[in-house]
Length: 255
Image 1 (spheres, rainbow, N blue to C red):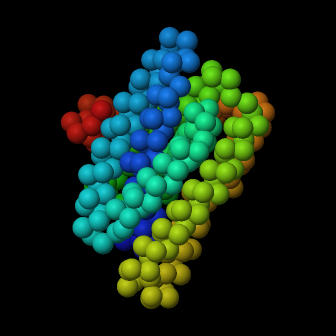
Image 2: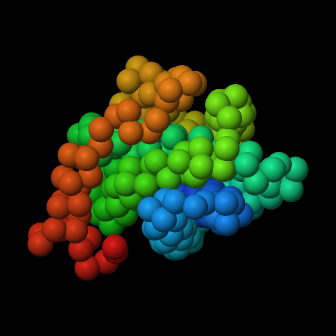
Image 3: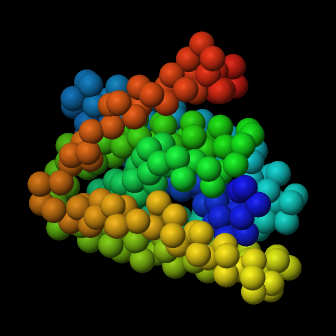
């Protein structure tokens, strides 16, 4: 990512986790689909499943290329699959939806930070990978309410929702941090103090670690929280035009 050591490894680890993460979310939503009675929400669920399946397909293709470049995406994929399989085995369908809503909160915040901040976009550099990540971000923002509203529709409680958020936070950050460190240890540039220091300063000073991001994460604990508390309509309209308009960056490739 724009010749940045830390960002390259973090993005690669996240990409490695996406296919199994998205498969888990699809399974979780489908497991409770029979309890949904609202026709509009049913339609949104169908769109959610379609978008997540497309994300999984594109990230698997990207992960094969990243693995060839030396990033441990296959290891991350296997680890994510085992962790989520265990969680599914020992959790109720309602709790799995609570986890899905929590993960969607994370992805929506990261997505909207990327789409709204030019500094974040510059960290991606140029080319096909940048366009793919922007497309993924756009669709994460588009369907950010679906899992949350499914959870509400099947009678989920605020207590379980908030617990799932912070339990998922611990697991997600532990896995991401360990996998990123393991990936960095395989890179010779990591052992150059100047490169590593410069990369760390840039990563932790990026928009993804801003106070605004942490405020949005914490907002999930409010009893009256809803994903639409933050209006994303202008952002979605802008990036649909940027990516899929007449002169769109990926109009012929995706969507």
